[in-house]
Amino acid sequence: MQAIGIKLGAVAFLTGIMAVPLAAQEAGSEAPISGEIHNRLLTLDTHLDTPLHMMRPGWSIADRHDYVTDNSQVDVPRMIEGGLDGGFFVIWTPQGELTEQGYASAAAMAEARQQIILAMLAANPGTVERADRADDAARIAATGRRFVFQSIENSYPLGEDVSALQGFYDNGVRMAGPVHSSTNQFADSATGEEVWGGLSPLGRELVAEMNRLGIVVDGSHASDAAFDQLLELSATPIILSHSGPKAAFDHPRNLDDARIRRLAESGGVISVNSIYLAPRNSSPEWEAMSARFMEMFSESAEVQAAFVRDLRALEAVTPQEDTDFEMYMASLLHLIEVAGVDHVGFGADWDGGGGVDGMRDITALPRVTARLLAAGHTEDDLGKMWSGNVLRLLREAEAHSASLAE
Image 1: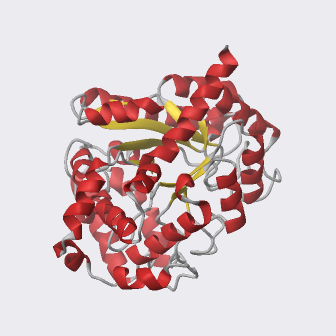
Image 2: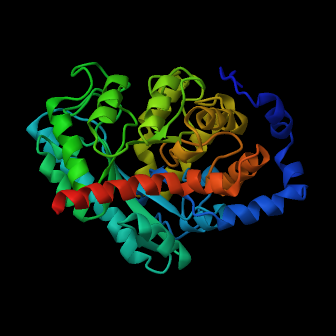
């Protein structure tokens, strides 16, 4: 495994706990207790890319799938097993040209992906329900169903008209990020070229429109300068829906400790990611595998299965990111140490590249709760991190929007 450049005050205490194999932990008397606590918690993840799988012919969120053979990490049966009550399902659009045609194509793609989410909700009324307000999460969870918020990853489909966000809001979007992996019309990307020195003038308009509607502003994927400006301009606290600390691995997508502290001081939240914990493999073999990505959406089940088999075989020889559960927990514990339990959430980037050895899908989430309890965190701490902090942000966004309408 790659070494993780992170220093934790409690590392001596945690090393002994982390070294215990999972089977031994589960055999101990504490496992049932931590499982009961996990099931009592209201849990959510702030970045679920599962709508990508909803686009696959023959794939249904109502069915149980297997990561090894299917490559998906979230479905309703596994949400139940892993104790995940709900989360933000992502409307993601890849970055294209900043042209009228590019904007139109992106808008059509984003609208189609939102419709896929709405169709999934309509097809499964007994197990999932759309959530529009913070209070919906607990209400829906109390019925035994999973709650479905929506978010936008990459506001590129809005083109040059921020009022287009209204339509997405009306259909359920309650979180949005201006940019993805390439710089666009709204902001510089953490992994793109510097064009605007942070936010563009249009990006500043977008922040104001998000605030007006009551949408939580998401700074994941934004450059450091754009993050600084989002923090300054937003009338309500912002979130990083799937990010990590540079102390874990110095990658542009990760945030330095000074910015993490400023985020916390402003009332914001950083939801811990499970990628960018180590260098990513960019070998010709991995480039070739990436080029085959659309095979996962083939009409042929055999083509889909063959792609996943080849992907698993390549991972067995040379992982794309050589990481494991211990590295993920070290990153999480560092975030807690720097930001505090009132400003940390969970956004592992499931179905979007997330997962580590020992935590490949959401059925492993109780392991996280067990480790945090073993590290001395209380059930109250866990309640904040698993959902309370994020729902507080949404309530603040709702309240600000309502105040503007008065």
